[in-house]
Image 1 (tube, rainbow, N blue to C red):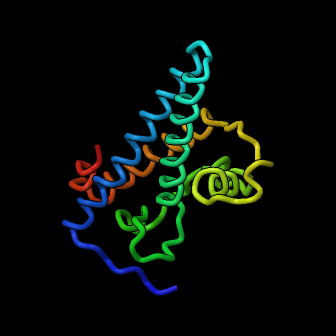
Image 2: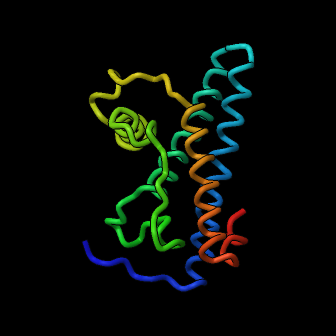
Length: 153
């Protein structure tokens, strides 16, 4: 794989805003999903619960790729754009073949196997993995380039 192009501060600041947005939307969708699980189930509330869950999962998928993506597309934003070495993110649920396949086939790509895939998600475990990885990332940014830490909300 070709070496990734180094980005300047202006591009990195914009990318930090993009990644911060993804994290904020993930957390907001997770909170909404949690709140909807406590509401009386009706067809309308169930639709809203599924919508918020899918939003959380979609943002989790984006953040997973940020944390552990390969960078095969030079336009992808990766952790290594902000710190020289990727931290060892413990993402066993998000890295698992089953979850990766389900995220792709149920959310991002229409497939014939969709109907056979489980609809139950370990969203609490996914939330814990994402928030732990986010804090580790922010700590590494603060260690490597303290002024860049302020770019992330």
